[in-house]
Image (tube, rainbow, N blue to C red):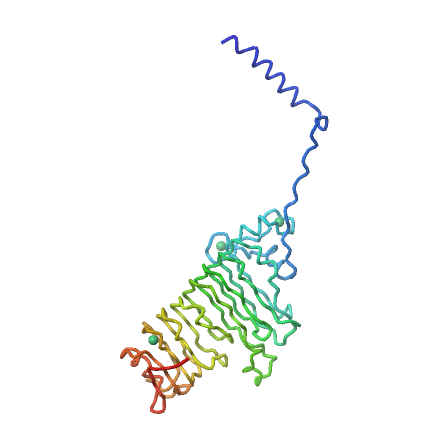
Length: 318
Ligand SMILES: [Ca+2]
Ligand SMILES: [Ca+2]
Ligand SMILES: [Ca+2]
C-alpha cells in the first residue's frame, strides 16, 4: 500500500497549489453571468397582476397561489414565464377605464388553464382600436374561461389551432352599456370567436354573450350552453355541423329558426321559457321554423317549442 502514498501526496500538493492560485492570474477570463431574457408585458395592469398578485395556480386547484416573479426582481424571466401552467386573472375595468392588453401572454408556452374575469365592464369604450386576444400560439391550452368583456371593444378571440383545447367558457360578454340599444344588433357589437383547428373542443358555454361563432369549425362539440343571450341571439340557431352534440341548452332566447338536423339526437335539450310550457305563458315566443332529423325522438324533443304556426321540416338546405 505504501507505493500509492507518494503519488497521492504529490497530487494533493498540486491541487492545493492550483486552489491557492490568485484569481485573474490564469489564461482564461471568468465568464460574465448570462443575463436571462426578460419577457416584455406592455400593459401595466397585466404586469402588476402577474408580478404582484397570486395569479399563478401552481397546483391545479383553480386557485391562484403564487405570483410569477420567483426571484423577486420585478421582472419576468423566460424561465419564470415557461413554468406557468395555470393563470387566473381578475381585473377591475371600472377603475382602469379600459380593457387589458394581454400582449406578452404568447410567451407562456406551457399554459394549460386560463381564467380571466372582470369586476364589471365599464360603461363607455375608451379603447381606440378594437382588441384581439390572440391565444393561438399557446398550443397546450386545455381550458379557457373569459368573462365580462365588452364585446364592442373587441374584434376577436383567436383560438385557432388549439388542438388541446377541451373547454371554452365565454360568459357575460356583451356590448357595454354606453352603446345605444339600437346599435346592439349591429356587427360591431359582436365579438368573433375564431375556432378553426380547435379539433378537440367538447364543451362550450357562451351564456349571456354576443359572439359570432361558426359551429362548423368545431364538430367535436358535445355539450353547448348558449342560454339567455339577451339580444345576442344569432339569426339562425344552426347546429347542422354538430354531429356529436349530446347536450344543448338554448333557454331564454328569442329563436326564429332552429336547425337540429345533424344525423344524431340529443340526450338533453333544455329550452326553458320558450313557447308555452307546463306553466302556461313564457317570455319568448314559439319558433317559426324548425328543421330536424327524421327521427321520432327528435320530433318529441321539440314539442314545447312549436305551435300550429311553426313550420317543422326534415329537409333543410343551408
Ligand atoms: Ca392553486
Ligand atoms: Ca423575476
Ligand atoms: Ca339532430
